[in-house]
Image (cartoon, rainbow, N blue to C red; front, side, top):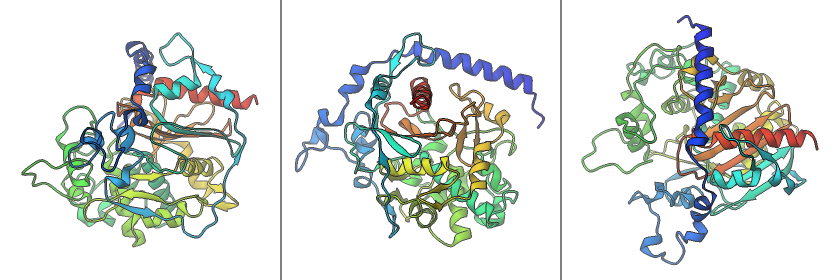
Length: 439
């Protein structure tokens, strides 16, 4: 498809205009955010906790606000998981040089006229934990609510960037051919919407599949995905797929591959299946052996699995904040950390070049004008070379190569889409970068 670049630029301008109105339409209520602190509300306190303070999967309360402000830091107590082992590699802690004066750094949110402090932005975005690295040292670290430095938290779609990186490594090694159609490796998907898509199209989410990723409205395909993976309770009489590998072949095709970016998590589950097929190992084991152990993590991670034990590569990695920050720092240094070249430098360079900015416009992200998506990473193409791993409810790894800064954040925002956090988060991150560059 030939893309008209002036039209694309006009659309990008419209997107930026829309983003500038978001904050004005939604006043920030810091008191309301503080009032949902899970410690204040007393969730799951007592042996047993009172019925009105209990959180369970079986009644849906685990994914209900404000209960999920507790759930996101206690995921393996609620759902079946498999370990991402740190193994016997030495854990190498970061040097700390904490500077709490970052709390007073100010910025103007998108669409706003009044400055906000860094500290207030953390409350506004329902932050559970945040860590800022500068030149490889921890310069800022805070935890809120149910999260502590030692406790893992679910990363949701930040998970995608871990597995996109793994897949890109397998491409670099010749184990995956990016131009090959998916059915070459997974004949089980030959008749699905993925069958005639290339591996590269899956990794950039430009597949034309009949799937609507919707976190707030009706989407029968999204419902089936949640039921299959175990992210939601199956209704009485449900007869659909009950595992992710059974669900993927049921997704049909709609449109032409390679023309438009649309964010759809099943693409990552296909990549997880591809990783398993070409390595002969579970994706969780491959992540452990190829990345998690080698970058010197301080603790195991873990992943939610479906009812037949398949790790959910699109959404289910849990870990400590410091280890998510470590992944970002390794990427910032061209795939190298603790003297170990974990990811080939050429793979990192390819990721940071990004994907098609024209295709990205179709995704409809008003707070990300001019960005692109490549190998399950979000790439800004700005003057700092920023790129990100992003997950619903505010999970993020933000990498700013020019400022030599990495930010890892866990959060439990009441709204899923990051468009609700970006107006405060992205300007805050840029302000932190500019402040650190002056130190």
